[in-house]
Image 1 (spheres, rainbow, N blue to C red):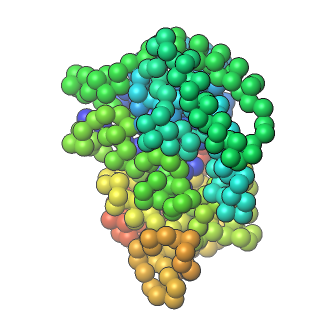
Image 2: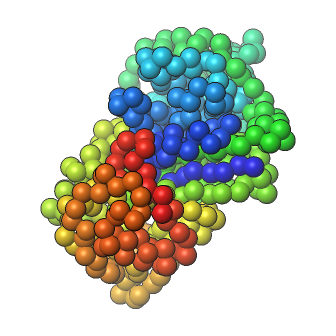
Length: 420
């Protein structure tokens, strides 16, 4: 069977640590979507490392890690990641596999991403400029190059054809930047990638399932950035929800069992787009500084706000979440009062659902106030050791969402996870 760990907000929920924690219980850890716009932060032997495309199970010696076909892969970033992993003494080639159907991000994809974003001016969507959107556009437009193409003699010819097509688009944007250095790095990285275990991902993963192996599917970004169900058009270009596991790995829906949804105890968002509970005051700044809320991929300061239960309930519904894992609960330790958004005023009317297009309506969050616990919870090892105010906060979330909070992260350490 396949269990899933994915984000329930706008990404940056701390999924990397959670996957790393759970990985010991699984045989295979597989990334099913996204690209190098992901940033999964782990602390290994007290040292910080950020993974962008490699599954977060790579630091578990006997675990198989698969980059699935739903991912778009930047070979340059991948090479750098492998070097970072090797610095921890990990033999990354031993248990890391790449699906042959995984699409490649080309240098021209990055150029198109940059040119397109610059052309939008004030209406830019906050792209990470990693080439993810253009790569997915070529995938759906049936033009893309895939990892399996690297094994064909015709790869260079196919690359040149696609590059010429991209150049016409870049010319229309009047993009003048020289990307020759990017191309040199790209072809060096492709030689590096060819040495990996390139497999038929869907047969590979289903064989593991038939052998009784336990699979953990690792998502990137968050549910509110899903290309279909997120805050469109301020979304990513892939399916970030549990349904994306089926198309991103090639497994049938009935193979999915548990869906672990990860949510912060508050909310953050990087880049542009609607954010009903955003705090533009001292509390928002406190959350940012205390929580070190800066993008692990871009370094951009994250927008911070109170937890949004309307959006969270929506995310639980579309994902079929069975358990919630709450991260960064310790960041709220210094607050005497907490707020929870439990409804929206949409154009003056009370609503309990996520509108069709958030950025086109006036949303005012409705709040319920809670007393903060105002004490250090980072040393708590069991739920009973947590303050009563925090238990009240958690139980309200359970009742509102209809899905239980089963784990609470109370610090960045691998073992700082309290089971409820």
